[in-house]
Image 1 (cartoon, helix red, strand yellow):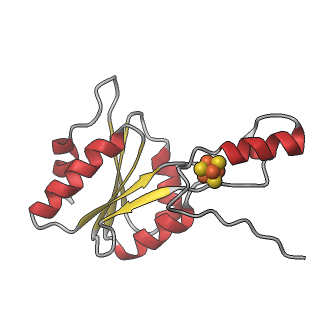
Image 2 (cartoon, helix red, strand yellow; image 1 turned 30 degrees about the horizontal axis):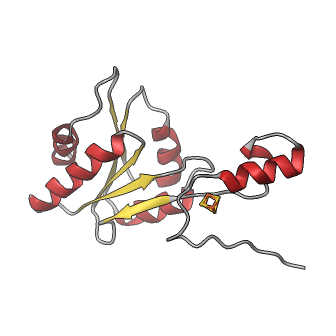
Length: 150
Ligand code: SF4
């Protein structure tokens, strides 16, 4: 008998507590990899017609949103995919966006971890890593500059 769980997108905040509860029921440990439920949660902003997509997670998302809004004001069709959860990786979302975009920018506060997953899902669309190290997050202007350079 086929069974399905449905998450109501608008009501789910991506907290993943259901994964934790399921993993405990399945394996008596709080480990999402043991869960039968997999939550993938993203927010798509101005991506319908985006030629340049920014994909961001965590603290980088705020600057990415400002950058995308600024780029739009400047006449560039930019959009943001904000990843609320990153595992399982939202491959289908990324590959759908990549089919329409001419390039993707990934701002990250490290040498590039998320970017590898994005490259794999977005192939053959070019993916640009905007890496930043240290405690200072990206400034929106840095992301806008990266969008302009494409
Ligand atoms: S992630 Fe799971 S527990 Fe959290 S709001 Fe969504 S459905 Fe509910």
